Image 1 (cartoon, rainbow, N blue to C red):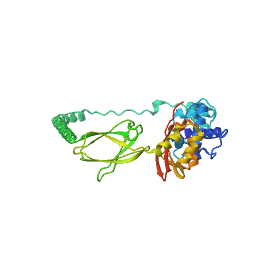
Image 2: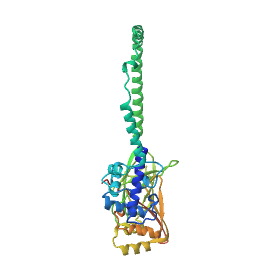
Image 3: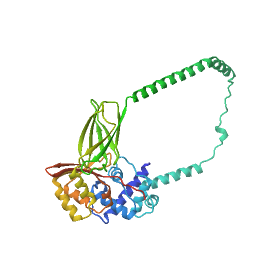
Image 4: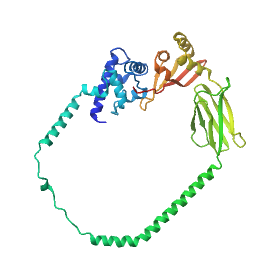
Length: 357
């Protein structure tokens, strides 16, 4: 990417900002200061006017962070160009030439003109006579040296080949010998109240003595398969919708397959239901007000290396989840905490749903 391309993108960002401000009143006029609901409203406006979408990660990367001087991929540039009234990124650049680009074009044209009009020189004047060297004596010496060393090179080649094969065989023996002591265990998870398989994703953290925990992601309706040569197993099983459970097993005579029941977190399930599933606006607002503490800490996890977490209060969260936007379909509650019958902490994110036009 050249500096000129980045300057054109800055011009496009300004055009996008001005276009949005024609019909909306975000928290700040400066697009780099938009957050939370402002971004969601902009995503919805972009879908309606340009038939495309920009993910939250893309927005944070290219609109809220100018230091890296990066531009989005071409399909995203085309969508943004359509949003501000052009057919493509190429047309936007042609009809919005920046001064720096104009100077660059003029400079290039001048250099081409100078090359065309430059006086021709006699090529033969610049050529120098080639120097011929008789290499016959050197060739004879090299031939004798190579002939004398051919036997030694032959032995070295096969010696290294033999050593490599020997080492490879030792590695194979060590690997398969170690695997003989491993044993596979399969754990299925079910809902303790409904006696059905877990339909959400689970986190299984393996705890081992004097080692850092190992985290595994278990897909919905899937068992957890773990291979180990240890005689003990300790697992911490967690999920946004189930209470955290610590499972310990003595694997000396343990079965290779087992079913583990998890207790549902009823408050977390209600939060998810009223935040995402229910369509009745008044009922949703009432139930969320009743369920969430007025002093709740609410975090939105942002898919960006620079902007990791943003906070909001209870009313802003309720406003967010009652907006009739397509972004709500991608809302995912990551974690929640209860205290005295009220939810005092919510951590959520809006997953990436970016699609090209």
